[in-house]
Length: 74
Image (cartoon, rainbow, N blue to C red; front, side, top):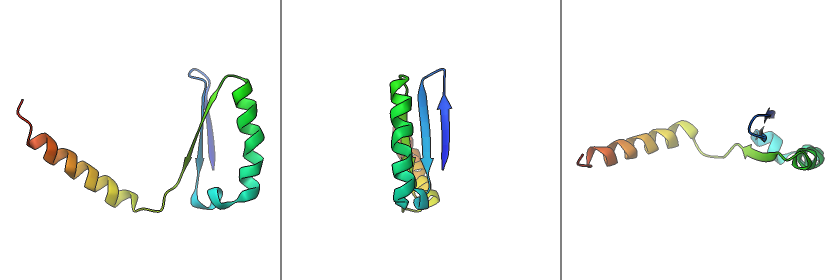
């Protein structure tokens, strides 16, 4: 888990691993933390790891975007 507050933009990023997101005690621990930041006017963004192959999905997306751009007339 990683918690990164951005004080300039009043955003808190919370990054959870697959193990973190399945840990109910950790999730309960985080709820008051989210509430405290909200009281201070922060937006809390929670990101959790997925189950897919990140490299494969990113490669597919880049190839699709490249093909779309190749078909465009500028």
